[in-house]
Image (cartoon, rainbow, N blue to C red):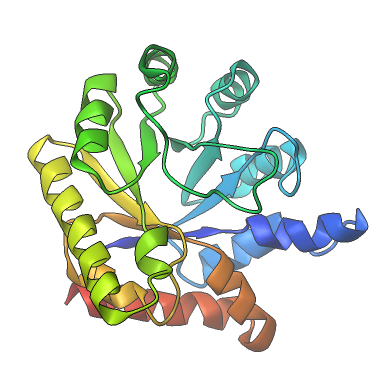
Length: 241
C-alpha cells in the first residue's frame, strides 16, 4: 500500500499572511501524523515565503514518522539538510515569481551540479529524490545522476481539462513508473492531487508514496485535519486494492 506524506506548507502560508504564530505548521504536522499520515513534507524555500527554518528544526525533533525536506539544490539548503538530517530530501525547481512549483527539474541544465548535491547528501546518509516530469529522458537522467528515486510531477494530469487528455497524462505517469522501477529507483508522486483524482494514480501501482498538501489543508478547513488526512488515506488505499 502506498504511503501518504502530508505537505503542511500552506498552513504556514496562512500564518505568514499575518506574520503571526498561528496556525502552526508543526502542530498541524503532528496532528496529521496522529491521524495516520506516514510522513510529513515541508518545502523550505529560498525566500522563506511559508515554512521557516525554525519549523523544520522543531519538526525534526518531534516527528516520529518520516520527514521529507523539499528544497532547491543550493549551497544554503544543502548545509541546512546536512545539519537537520531529514529522512528524505526531494530536490525541486524553484522560482521566486511562481505561486507553487510549476514543473519538474530541467535535468539537462545542470546535471553536474545535481550529481554533486545528490552525492554530498547521500554520503551523509540522506537519500535524495528528484522532482521530475513523467518523461523517459528525465527518468534516465535521474538514474545517471545517482538519485535514490524520483517524485513524478502529476500536475499535468491533475490540471487536464478533458477526459482524453487526462487519460493520456495518466498513461505518461504509468510509463514513467514502469521505467523507474526497471532502473531500480523508488517512485513517489505528487502535485495537484486531490480527493477526486488521486485514486486513479494509486491504481497504477508502483508508487511507494504520495506527497499531498494543498487539497488536504483546504479540506481541513471544513472537516478538521484529522478527518481530511483519514479521507485521503482511504482513497490512496482504495486505489491500491
